[in-house]
Length: 212
Image (cartoon, rainbow, N blue to C red; front, side):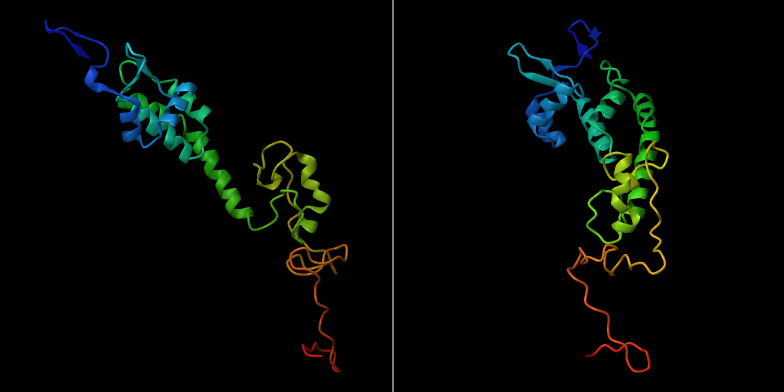
């Protein structure tokens, strides 16, 4: 609100509530170049002085905090903008309006959590990335079967996503190689550590012995 000598008040920020881009950068922790980028995307808004200098309302700090929080939970800048577009510019959004915007994130955050849980569960096995550099990939993803479903690490995709294959489960056929340390199915060297050493020779009683 702006006060007048006759006591009237009109909507709009008082000059003391406005921040220069340098002040906004200092208080938000973002570089001035990042603030100009946010402004170009419509995430924050500035007014201009008669000399063309940017001025931001103090409530812009909360919009910036909102965007940075969105990025920390894995939301894109576009998703943050969609949420922020629901807020009024004047007057500054109240708590109830901010709460409604935050609630709109819930489904997206739940999706992000589920994706991280899948990553945690599958990162130690074949993830369908197509590199075929581990001997187990020749079993889980023979001939890059996962690549037929599209680009990317297919086994990390949501199971409900169309075209996401299911891994074979890592079962080793009877008589097949050990996916963690044995030779590749084609009989070639182990891609993780060079040629495999020959198995220890059998002793007179049929047991294995380690020495020559």
